[in-house]
Length: 328
Image 1 (cartoon, rainbow, N blue to C red):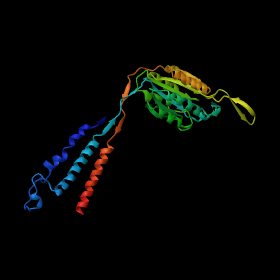
Image 2: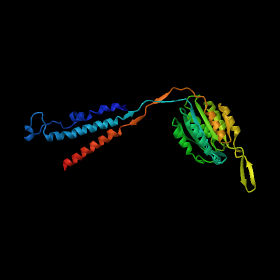
Image 3: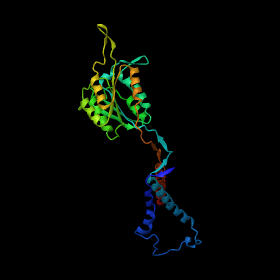
Image 4: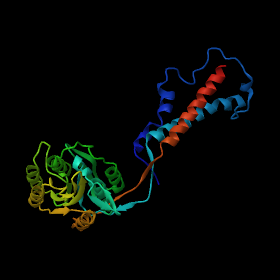
């Protein structure tokens, strides 16, 4: 159906008539000092001559243009059918590490070696798409932490922005504490018991204004539950001038701090050494108990004001053109 956002604007419709009959400086029917008889004076009563009928058309066109202009100002909208939104009540924030170490190629996808960020995008993207009914936000952090998307039901946009993230976008270092602090700030106004942060990193805190443990204490006071994920293989074969040897690519991972963060906030710490383990972790996170919340609904709205506005502009142009031609 059609709905007007500001219907009270229709009270201005009589303004031209009020101005013409009451506010005009010259009365519209003032008689002439000298009356010259014309052929129109002998016309039958009640019948207008062609020239009189022609002079009425600009008035009617102007009236229609004014009606269209007022209608456009009242913001007409087309309201679609009522759509029910499935709501679980969870406010889920993802914090993804974009530091330089995320470019380490120690994960496999389809038999192909990929870097840690690519594996994270693949698995976390599937996780996001399954979160129907949850509000999801995205934080990207490196040397600094950025809120890439606020809490939203638009899972598609969150996934797209995650896929567009690149290593080094937020700096080469790792500010875990700042990422947690930013999540607390974004979730502070939400109801307690509904706030969840999933933080994924492959290193230790090397930057930022807030230490991870201080940020965890703040999160615990605010009722924010944090699930931490340490990513990176524990053994990888490398070749160099001295031959083949095994190294630990995740030697810089601070598992102790990540475990403490999770325990302080009532969450859990997970270790992902390969893509399969990372998928299992997100599968476990997928089973978080939602908090019941009233269902939400909305009606899609389509703005219709361009149509009457275009009509008013077109009629105004016709009036202006007619006046110009009349003078010529």
